[in-house]
Length: 169
Image (cartoon, rainbow, N blue to C red; front, side):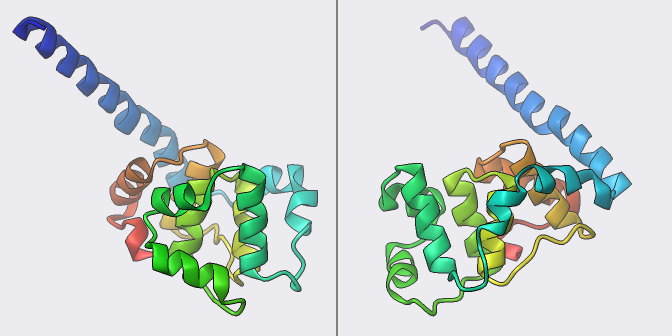
């Protein structure tokens, strides 16, 4: 490959990254400025049956592994994609009283590429919720609503909106 073709390829990759990291956050910025709590009530109502499937008797572990089974993906792919250590994942699997951090729930939901309602269901099983009045949670909801599951993009959006990352949740 000639130098000119390499430069063109690098430039086209840069343009694509600019599209990914500049144009999409414009919509996100609008959401953050509006901070409209009613904007997301529709997505929850559409999947209300799915959200209501998890009563309090189901543990986080049961709900998580139901979603993993539904995904037909091996456990190893899920925990690697979520950047979770194998031992940590083993603890989740074996300890029926395990209580995850908000970050762990979010990373696993992103790795499983769950819908917003499924993510909220997983949060509910872990005794968490998705607040509608904090920038970091608006960004996370935006990512689930728009099927943005790449951890780097999610972290980039979080950093641009509120100078935080998934590790800060």
